[in-house]
Length: 588
Ligand code: TSX
Ligand code: MN
Image (cartoon, rainbow, N blue to C red):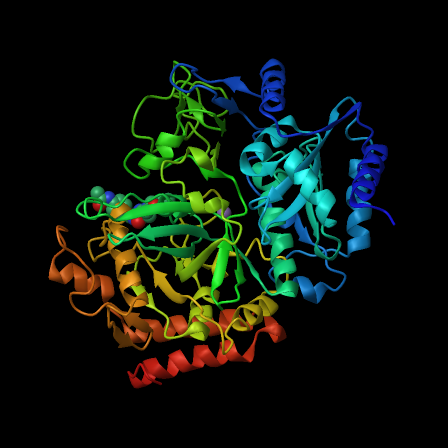
């Protein structure tokens, strides 16, 4: 019988024969190893030292200007059967895909070091956690993986005990956009990524493993791998309720995960605990509830827009031991980005004069990588092997009209429809038109490793007689008034919306049934101390039946576009809401 160690060794040897590195280094995850890598990158220019007086242990990485984001056209999910990938994924036959990318890997590590990076997604002792090994020739990837995952010796020991792990092979390659692939082979628990050093394409534990491979694994094993933040909300009685929330990009997911309750909530004993800002693995417990872990150990967050006003906790954790990618710097080498609200940029993200009209000084997708333990609101429960019980799932989007501040699904099936029909208006982006509605079901469009029809059926299947499922809500922080200004103050004040959700969960709020779901009854949403008049409140919760009829029609067409695997039950739910709108009767 071959042990896991043999199979790991065999795979490393086989990969070294293909890629022909000068050296092989097995990562132990130690601090000494991290510092050695940092020093090596400081020497070769991969890292630039930031101001060590103001930002001890902080470094800047400038990526290739052609390699600054995920590339969806080149991201493939290679199931043997094309239908299993679904219309939501780019697909290639697995044998053809391996042949194509292995040709690029051939000899690609000559003159370089091959790093073997064992990692665990989730607490090492958790039955919900899963392990992987990434082989990479990028020291930047190794350093980031050490921050983002439980990386090194303990992970390798679990892999040797457990037997199964995800194999990820990555090479930075020539960074030629024409010779770049990110391939997933879910049946083989394998990822191959060539030609990009960018986080989402190269830190294989995150989007590739924890979402694309894991979502497929979760489908066959009966759990959920989701693109969701997790927060604990502690009330004045000291009880903590956990919620998981999915938002499309540019809705402030990281900000919500680190929310600081405003006054008088804080004084009254309310507190937010951050469990995760991006990924949530949930599994039904023996009690029928969904129990969740954050598989990550760090944040890989978008820098622009992060400030002492929008996210004080994030700014506090970025003062030391962080890697910044593609941000600008001030004259005294402090990190800087648009929306920081302090300091002045001297050099832009490419090292050019920041004031010479080359556009934004920091790249709009510039990032920070930082250990989650540095976040002031970090929850100790992130280390709990069994995870945390989820009381509510929240879906959201950026919609300037139509969608109320908050409403609740009438039941699980309705909640799945809310997730499946999630949409957001595009914000400033190079290729997109601004203000166009884009659907992004459960914020998983680029991350679901199998057919969306099967994925929605999987979500629906959790509704069993003995299950204690979370309530499902939808929020929209971005509704605008006739004058074009935001109706809701957002940020910390979102605490008021979270409080209403908790009141619904504990049966202390009745709500009002509407055809689209349950909204707060008069007085249930605490608005004390907010300068919000009756007219604004009405505009925040107004439901326009004709516009919603149109929305439901759009949703129906969207679901149909996924073809025959779309569950009938979801289409029936879309029809039920349509009928409720027709009849003006929430009970339809
Ligand atoms: O993150 C945001 N959140 C969630 C916070 C916990 N943002 C930033 C989105 C870009 C990533 C928001 N922007 C939020 C929000 O709740 N709301 C808004 C819209 C908004 C912007 C500015 C104001 C108000 C609302 N400013 C003033 O009212 C002064
Ligand atoms: Mn994300």
